[in-house]
Amino acid sequence: MALARALARRPKVLLLDEPFSAVDWTTRQRLYEAFEQWREAAGVPVLLVTHDLPYAARFAQEAVVFEPGRALAAVPAEGLTALLGAA
Image (cartoon, rainbow, N blue to C red; front, top):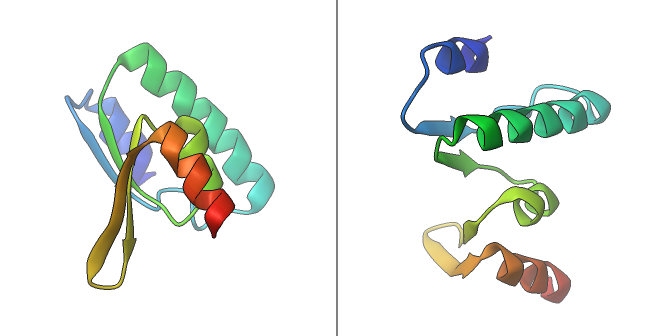
């Protein structure tokens, strides 16, 4: 509901912290797809915090990977796929 309220206000930028973490995997995949369609149509920049690296690699334009206390890498999304392969 919080995400729906935020989208209803037609934001100029959207900051999200694990917005789909409380739902099951199947629902999360559907929400990711619907959210990506909305983002493309709305053209709103999104800053998303997620632990779901495959999702980030699929939909991000840029990514910053953190470990406790420091940033490990700031990469274009294509570079995130390489980081995932190295992990």
